[in-house]
Amino acid sequence: MYSRWVVGCPRVQTSNEPLAEAALKTLEKYVSWIDIGLVANDTFVPLLCELLGNETLRIPALACFYEMVAKGMTRMEKVSLIGRLRLVELLCALRVDAGVDPEFLADVAELVSLVGVELVGAWQNCVEGAGEGAMPALVAPMLSSLAQRAFVLLVHPEVSVGKEVVTFAHAMVICIKKELAATEVPPSVVAASFSVRSFTKQLIECLASRMRYPTEALSKNDEAEFAEARRSVKSEFMNLTRACRNEIMEFFGAHIAPKVRANAPCDAVAPQRRRPYT
Image (cartoon, rainbow, N blue to C red; front, side):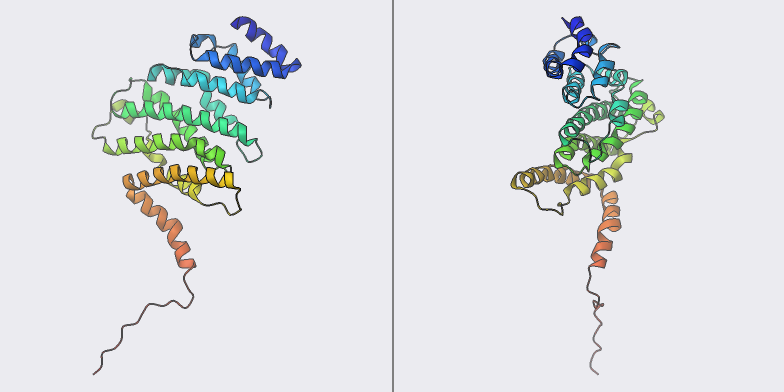
């Protein structure tokens, strides 16, 4: 059945997109329990990548990638799968600007977050000395690239897109705390010349940006969605504040203090000490 689907789908997608969409949605439900080799291979993955260019089929195609990454396996197996699928390269190559359909971008953000959480979890294991020797060298370059894409999505104008990356941000905050608390770092981690903590300043900037209230009026539904997302983002910002006080103070010094000075009354002067009577 699987082989017939793979052979037939390229023909169906050009002649009957609704049927191809139904086939993808059906396959999505099977990925969680069939052998991963049936989908993570040189036949099926290029087909999914091709379907990401089809506006009708790209969302169910992306869902199939999501189910592959969500499949239960060991950390090392998961990292190897992400690398074998070249998912980080794929996600970084997709357009994520304001002109792209927000529904598709929300699904992209959700997959970026899932992959990011898996990679951060693997890196955290390495920092704690529980990761395999080769893992840091595999994780570091992928996480470095994916984090930049995640930051772009986190500050996207559409709240529905940005809120999907908060889970990734949460994983980064936890990992930063682990790195700060680590007394001994395994040699393989040192050799990777990488740390999640190096993203602290960017993460602070993005979380602060995501918390800002929009300038335009929102509908009741959009306002409720924004308020819910803002609560989650604020929670991560406060967690980061407690862990990285110096970086937070730098942020406030660079962004908040100038605005306070700019809004101060022009005639505000320092109070003079009254001369004592003689």
